[in-house]
View 1 (cartoon, rainbow, N blue to C red):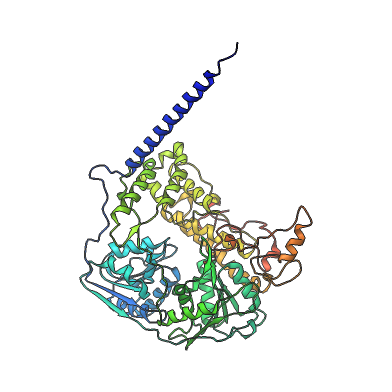
View 2: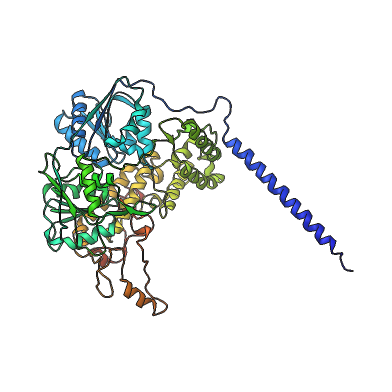
Length: 618
């Protein structure tokens, strides 16, 4: 018996109506959920942070590079005898610590960088901004224009906005004054000291070839591969006298590289823009091999303020005479814009204003601001806080920070808390885990989750293998292998400082592994530079950009040979390197003598995994 044709039509209509009703119900539920996320329980709505005691005096030290801003501020701290010096880099904290320690009696000055603690309760403490106490007598905040940094700026904003200090000295480029002043508008007195550059900075009229580079020269490139390619081009003229500096090197190696350049053992230093963050070296000349960089999102030309920060390293007052900035020519695939360097030099001299981004300081919540009771509440609470903060700061000198990354981390942890680890995953523990300063960008996202899980397992009384937390140092390997091992050890230190005794380890155990990696890297660097083959096509030897392995012609020819052909991208891939030297997307290529060692062939060391307290785990 056939079914009348109208029945299927009726069914379809009923299905359409049902689908529409379901969609409307979903939309209504979403609106209710969004309203709930933006609403607060009576009396639980947070307030914008404020300090409890008004500063008596805030002194702005404004000016270009090499103008004595930090020098004068440290003199004030030295004279006061109590206070805090805070900076964005461990190297700067070390420099201030060394200088003040040389002037003051033993025990007067301490150091606190997270990785290193020396007399942290001393009357004067030199530290990184994240370690700066929120109250004290006198605060010297170096590189205060970092308040506009999209990643770490919220630490500067909270310290300046809510820090309870009697006196504050804020060191900054002049362009950041309008960003910083509203954060200290409650000060009883505000003093502005304008500093002028103390040495001349000239722009070289003609490009410099590798064979004409003089001692005491910094050469700048913006990726790890480019740094090695430039160093390899310079090394034949000065064998063993060329050094490299980039963000992926362990801090101990970076300090050793800088010290060698300062002592004159290294005559030319090839560096990324890590050198531009206030590090002082006796350089008479800064040469740019390129003036574009990948900033984590796109490849772009340098801004004039970035160029000025680097160019200003030349001609440091008290270390050298006058300085010069120019272009390095003759390295395949690299090109610098002389016009941009001229504009940057004008900013570095204080003759022109820079294009420092006018980002409003960012506010990030504390746990008490969220009104959450359980870890499962955090995603909604963070979303609600972000909506509230954006509205609350609409007419303020700050803006709400994007806390999406914290929400993503919470969602990654919540499935782990449904099992046996739930007993250890209280709200405070989860909050501390998601705020660990461990990179959560691919490919290191898994590393954070592994460490967080290990901390939960340890808190729940479950066994954790030491090598899960602290990977052993490779017995053999390349510079890149040891860089990655050192980075993993730093991540372990970060975890163990907040969650000691996970897998029976301490942060000192991880620091020992990092130091051993740094020592090995220092030993390998000279050969890594001299044997680098970057900048030449591996098939025909034609000069190419250092981030390629073959030229276009050889790549096209290989493509015509079918399966197994060699491919390469025709653009400079994002994964080449982030501007500070870190590879965000791919494992670095092997470099130098250690490339001949092949892959890791073993593990070394003994440690707590075998019952010993000293050394590293196996």
